[in-house]
Image (cartoon, rainbow, N blue to C red; front, side, top):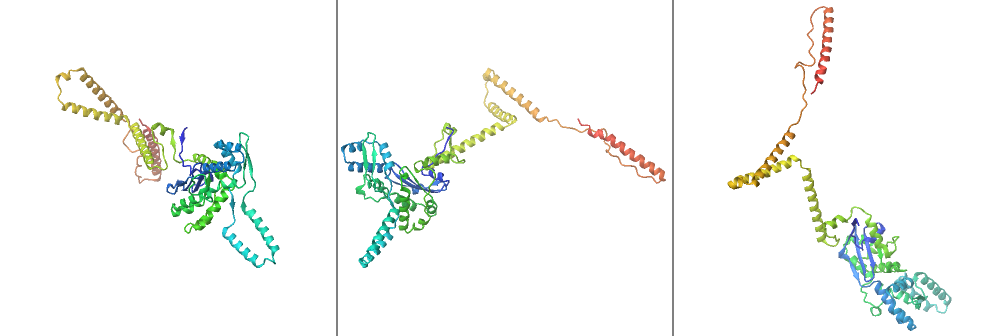
Length: 436
């Protein structure tokens, strides 16, 4: 493994949508968690955890089926059923029920219908029947609920019948619509309560950013109707909170292409392809650098100290490698001079001067001094180019002054002067170019 990148499991799902800010709700096996993240940095102060999870759903399903079993063989098969078999049954049988009708509008419609029925009982019996049929059709369209029971065949061949109401009642405690006395396990807060509590503990400027991208993770989030029920309950809860009511208009649920059960793994793989992030390399492991932790300040400070120490060490090594041999010899000379002065100040016995060890030290010092002198002579002697000329006269002599004579004499003098100038130029050329 060349390098490892550390990432929180509640931050990784955001990378599946190509964003770094949002709110992740994880429906895990033993607990449910909610944590916001702003610009790639998680907010641990806003982390909220509850006891409910997939394990509580499976326990509720098992106990409810044992209580509703018709034969002893079904009870025995349900009691001996493994965790993997219960998960397989939950995926094939369970779903989440939701009703999109507003409760207030429903109450107003019922009151109006009762008044109309009291006033027009005798005259509008046919109209009432038509209205009831329309309401039933609307209820079928706005309510996700099935009236069919399903059969599940266990590994030993036992046929287990799951009632229609039990198919959605096992998941209701995740949304806290079941009284605690009917629950098989202590769940705690619901998913919507977790999100509301997490938003309250966030800074005011981070709430609007986080609620715009809500991602659901976990195997139970893959059940049919889960995302619709969660978004409906969250919108209703935000409308009831005075300080969080403006956020209801901006809340949105992200739907990346990956399923909720593997969104954390997909986000981690996408994060690993990015560059410039915190990475723990193989050289760090061999050097004994402690593992980084995004939630710990001590490990981050230790990593920075180790990195700065490594940089200083590299700089010192590079500076020593760049020093010239003359500088190294000067350093050795200074050390030897200091050692010789200390030896001169110390009392020397006659027995020590005659010892072979002392003679070897003197010979080594003499050899070092000779090497230093040779290097100094080699470095100080620099050959230089010198320019030698044949004469010190100027290269181009001045022409003689004109004589006041006739035209013939002036023309002859001008021809003589021009010829002398050209001859001087030709003679001076090779003298300038002669370089040793």
